[in-house]
Image 1 (tube, helix red, strand yellow):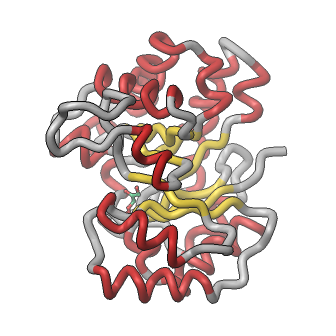
Image 2 (image 1 turned 90 degrees about the horizontal axis):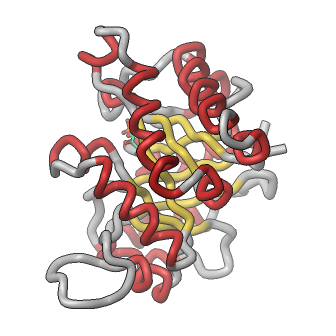
Length: 251
Ligand code: 13P
């Protein structure tokens, strides 16, 4: 049985004051012990959030890491080893905002995934198609390519210590959620692709759905057989809404 997981990606949001308030709200949530809960603040606020969530069963991760695993001369970057050192356990790699707006290639995403694992962090590999790609009937091809690049480079075994997040680009921040059936189809294809190399890895890997997840849509989404939880953007900035999404994953 896969343990459900709900993760909040705070993106480039927050001030010291708002982050303190959000962490306080998270502390007050009654969370089910059957669900892994994680938050991804901006790098600037990671230590503050770790301190604010001390003693609470919520993991903290980073939204990105350098392709170089170890510290060195690389201005502006943060290495996976540094993230581990401050207390992170997870890191997002290949979020569509980084792929699309910052030109991150599959090769770079693969190197970040490897850097994270080399340091003992669990990478959360984000994959997903644009609206144009979906409309052209290329959804499964695009997602399979993004996943395949990492499998080819690192082997399927790498996914025994990783999480996958399917985030259709057209659903991110738009209020348009993929239907549970649309999401399930892609999640099943991701699992099948992994199963072609290792049935055991495929059965164990958690595949999260991301894209305008709200408490109201979470129950149905998380009820699908291959959807193991969510990667939540906007709704994770509200502790009560995020808590309701976490509860939906425990049902
Ligand atoms: P929204 O939930 O705001 O659509 O963002 C999803 C996302 O990008 C999470 O990584």
